[in-house]
Length: 491
RNA sequence: CGGGGUGUGGCGCAGUUGGUAGCGCACCUGGUUUGGGACCAGGGGGCCGCUGGUUCGAGUCCAGUCACCCCGACCA
Image 1 (cartoon, rainbow, N blue to C red):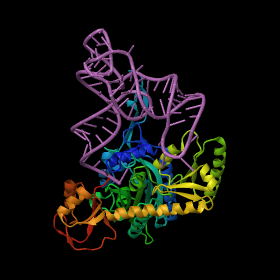
Image 2 (image 1 turned 90 degrees about the vertical axis):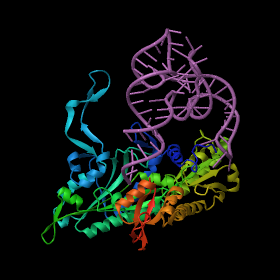
Image 3 (image 1 turned 180 degrees about the vertical axis):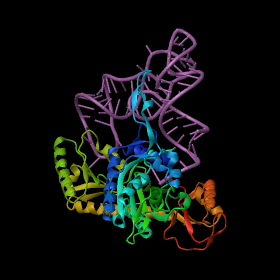
Image 4 (image 1 turned 60 degrees about the vertical axis):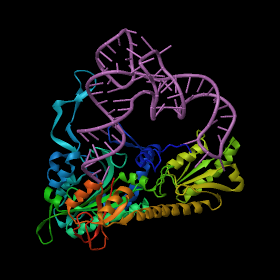
């Protein structure tokens, strides 16, 4: 096969970039850090959206839309929130252009300066809590459980397609509750929704945990997260869910009357996943031949490539292919029949491998004689011949197996690269030479965390929710520790 | 914001001491092909990032400027 990707083993970053471009997922656009998500990449995002949206609604949420622009003054209301986002906000200062009097082109009209500058949302807590104030008076108005699908802008210094772009697509849930307990339960529930989605739908195994103070969302009391381990041994935060306490209620003066007649501050959560998940998908399953898609996410689960020489051969093959298309569709399997005569079969084979289509069927005259098809599996790259009779069931079965196989494969890799170390020497060696999720004792101080990051580039990805109590001493400071935390280099 | 690199057909690149801008892929036409990125023949397409300078003459030399990419600090 003609090599179109850098080798995964020798240059992982380049392999990733090549794959995104060559599989037609996305490309860079005119503005640095902004990308065009191409139809194939967007189709994968739509699959994710559909399933997540279903899960959100099943857990009692409704969708709404809040504006892109946020008055600058809103941002100054919650101190740690401002601090966290101030450095990466795009700001709108004017509302009009005019012809450049000195030549061609247009300039910003200096007379059209906004009285109050607008922030392009990096996240929507502020505008939403300003709105919730108006919506909430009594305990009868609670809870409010809203999700929005939106774009956000964070002016990052360094960007990478899908993993970190200046503008990205995501969903953000924002809920308001009468009690602390209820808000915590909401945040935990949504973390579980994410974990379930990632494992069952994307076949990406995750650790569930909470962030340390320094990694916590700006404005949150507690940040829960799901962390996944990529093929190169680096961790990727795949989703976060925040218990916001009463921080935003305080900042935006959102109170409600209780049954007892007192006035109390509202409790909040927010949670989100983004198009970054497409990066996670790529770096969990794909190989040197290209993308590998779990069947549940694949825009096309099956592709059919006809093989023929003459017109009369094509007619026969075409009829058989169309018959298979119909049967697969009737069984709820999405199938793409590529009958273009502008590309040769070999070209198509490579193309669909690059694009990660789970199952490829080739049918030619020789197959018709034997009433069979050639079937290729993307996850194992195995080829086999299958009788046409009962093909639909065979494919349904393969798709199901592929979904679990991908998860199991990724789970095994993650488990193999999750390990404990106890000394500083082991730790530095592990970070430098092995990567993966490194479980080590930590003394609980931000200072130690900071020094470890400085010295090794590894950060605490999370404190696992189910981490067992275990007496030990901090891998760096030697001070006592009650449980291990998970370290890794991260995206 | 630091360090490095690159700007030349749609994409990837070459272009020597300054002398008519080239190659591969892609594209178009015709034909032969079609079971792992076909082949032959013909054809179209370029203000050489931008601005200024040196020169009879600049893709090439000089100055400036802009953009993008990679590596760091910051981050979903």
